[in-house]
Every structure is written in C-alpha cells, then in structure tokens.
Image 1 (cartoon, rainbow, N blue to C red):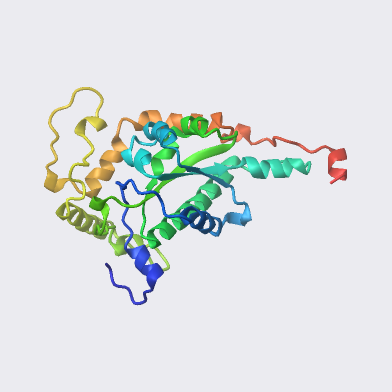
Image 2: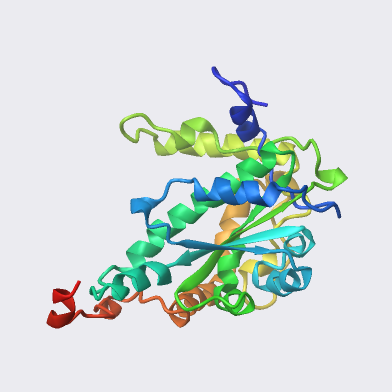
Length: 295
C-alpha cells in the first residue's frame, strides 16, 4: 500500500480500494444494509436538495433482468446486493408545485448536481462496506439501460437510474488483491495553475502504460479490434506488450457502440420525463396570481 505522511483506519481503507468482481454465496451480515443507508444519507448534497433515490435490489431475478442493460456484467446478477442510484427530480418539483410556485429549475443543471450527490452517496456506501471487510464494484453501465431499468424497478417519472453498486463478501479469488495502477499523481494534480507540458504528459502516460502492461491488467480484457470497426476487419495489429491504458481507453471511446448509445441515453432521459433541450425549459407549472396570494 502507498505510504502517506498521515494515516488512520479510514485512510488505510481508502488506499486499499480494489473493485471486486466476484462474490461468494454468503449473505451480507445482519445490520450492514442499515449502516450503508445511513452512510449514504450523511453524504454532502448540493443545496440540501437530496435529488436522489436508491433502490436496494435483493431479488436475484430482478438483478438478472437488469444485467443485460447494465453492460451484461455477471457480478450484477451474482452479488447479494445491488444498489441502484437514481437522479430524482420528481420530489423537488412536487414540493415546489404543491406550494403553487412555478417550477423553473433547469432539468439539465439539476441533473448535474444530482449526479454529483448520488455519486458521493454511493462512494460513502462503498467505503463503509469495504471498512467492514466487504467487497464492492461500481456499475456505471446502469445508465446504458436507463429506460429499461426504470421500468424493471417500477420507478415513477423523472426518477432516472444512473449508477449501480454491487456489494457482497468477496469470492476467495478476489481477496487480498493488489490495488490497481492509477495515473501518476503529477498528471492529475496541479497547484494554483495547470502547468503540464504536452511532452511531459506523453512521458507520464507512457509510464502508466508500462505499469499496466507489467501487471497484466488487461490480460483477457482487451477490447476487440472488430469492436471499433464496421464490417470485416483483419488481425489485431497491437501486441499484448503494447496494449496499455492509453490503447484500452482509446478503443473504449472508439467503439461503434457509441453511435447507438449517444442517441439512446438522450431518448431514455426524455422518455423518463426530463426536459433537456432549450425549448423544454418553460415552467411546467406556472402559479396564478390567486394561487400566489394564498401561499
């Protein structure tokens, strides 16, 4: 584990973080869920709006139906608990209109702050679970199937599933794993002003690639050559010793899948009730003069 000038059990838990992608059949210890829920509630939230809703999915059948819409990741189904975090603009709109005020908030702006808040809450849950000896993995792919997962969970309009968290006892193969490489600190931290040259950035990225390749991080996890091409393709020209972080990230952003996903997520958000275009920003509920006089 990386050494830091100051340490305590919380910091040691943070620095030991490693996503767990296989879980044992053991149930969660009694009381763990209550602890996670309280840790999530205590996270900071923009303007105290708390524009989130969380669904704790215990039913494996439901998780099995969620799985293909969340990246078809096996651990979504196999973990004992999947927490689905949702952006919830319904609650604050209902509170506003119940008092006969005009709801003028920008759905796009609230969505941004909602994502910030629910991510903090989910990280609190992950950190709390890890501190209790459990394993977790975030599921960003939940947003891929926002509309389908919305229907599976019976969510009301304007409550959008965006992020998942698998929680459970790690399988034997996932215990005591080494923390994975991260980008060099010099690449991501700056003091007062951004001062990284393009040449130094390239050097640091190459350094990170070497660390990733040496540890075999992408062994068996390469994105196929065919995934970034339409139609027949030849043999993958990149050898394993050159398949590092930059190659993986570049392929991830080049997948032909993106041409479908971009329009889909916008369609999903609007189908669930969010108003994200400029011409959708008119107040949904305009208070009348008589209504305002009675509030």
